[in-house]
Length: 123
Ligand code: SF4
Image (cartoon, rainbow, N blue to C red):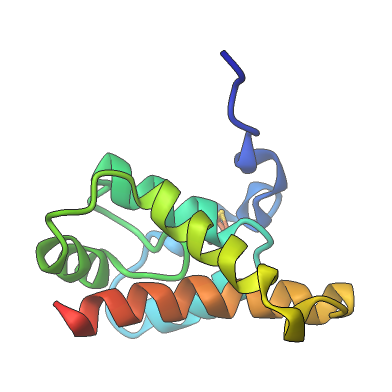
């Protein structure tokens, strides 16, 4: 059985102070901004949702946002499959075929965020 790629090795918070992601109140806004530039944001968010991680900002979402998302979509059995599938579908679109790396990464982050937001709103 093939092992999943270890996304943690590419995490932005791996080398910075990860404690800054376990903050409360207004500071969480800054933590979310920090995650916005992380190359493995989708994987991180999916992990937190699949494992039911209760505290901290993961994948750019606060614990409160994740709880609301989980409550709104009890039917989802694998957030990893759902979010990475949405990302793959996004890249399969012709309009994004020739994106530069930087733009593609920004789009990837935005896709994960929009997907999570849409799922929350449609519930
Ligand atoms: S998205 Fe996840 S892995 Fe990336 S910086 Fe934020 S908490 Fe760390």
